[in-house]
Length: 134
Image 1 (cartoon, rainbow, N blue to C red):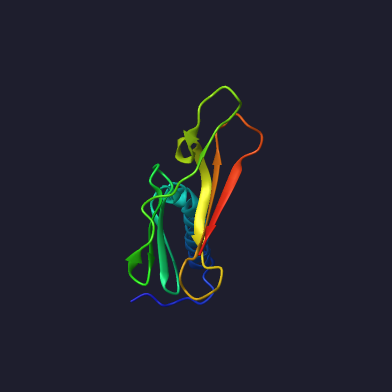
Image 2 (cartoon, rainbow, N blue to C red; image 1 turned 45 degrees about the vertical axis):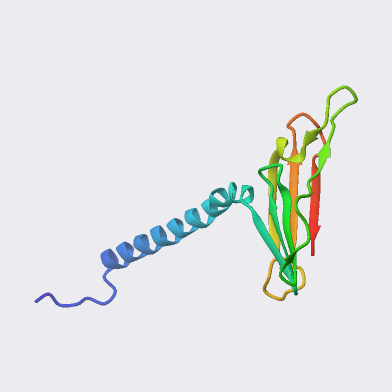
């Protein structure tokens, strides 16, 4: 049986390297999380506040659908259209590139009741941000 050495510099260095690798691995994983979430804002969102729930699909021209109030659907569909310049036709908002977006709980009750979506077309200086809130 080997005697246990307190202060063995070799094992202390190995322990330090192991801890450094664990911390570095955790930092890399944490930095990669936003990249993994980057495409998550193309899925339908559900916003809820008290007796109201809406569904927003930012990746299709379905847009806002299923606005439920007390269990009764109040809305079939609502979405936004726009035009860039004066010669082109209107386009559905989802034809622009969704640059960023996400839901939040603005009244701190545990349910997401606020959604912001930032769209752009890659050619304009200003991008458009749309906010939907219950």
